[in-house]
Image (cartoon, rainbow, N blue to C red; front, side):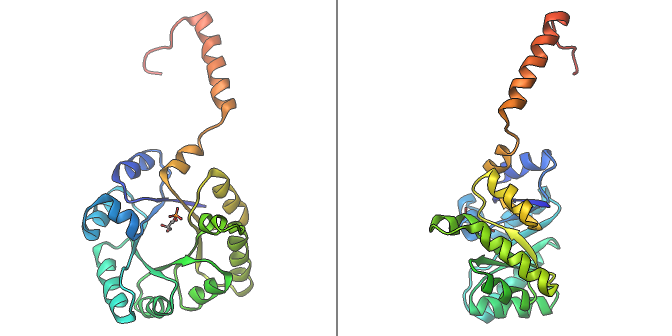
Length: 220
Ligand code: E4P
């Protein structure tokens, strides 16, 4: 399973990359706006940190503008994956860009039927938003499970990217469901490390060591 970070923040990306845990990055207009730089500049800086798929989203809503904007985003770097929303124009743009060899991540997917449209349009990735579905009282993970089953039934190559991850449990359940990718905020990646028994066990090991050897050898 690939881990993507759902952030445009360079410090978070650098830290995640140092851990060797960042296979790619997803951004969206809200995340780019939070960093305050023009999208071309921010995406280029992200590409310098992470060598993997970097999603950059169009903000146009009409087909020809979306295609033009998508081509511009794809020119920023070879690793850029153009993100299009799951609207009628977005799906048409996905088909047009895909036909030209530009990889598209279809975003804002909230139903298995929408995911079928994305796959049929030739999307490289589809992004079901688990957390936002949970927010309205449905079970977001059912969406991921249904999409994976449907894609398997027909051999669609579109990768399923579990998005809107709010907790380590979301990541784990996406892995159990067989999602190709999970994209998560830095906070969720960080939380994946935590276990009280790891902390407790380490504390005991160090205490036992210190009782006999007093100090930790330098350089260890
Ligand atoms: C996915 O690519 C989106 O950027 C993201 O996962 C949205 O998550 P949110 O619902 O936490 O904003």
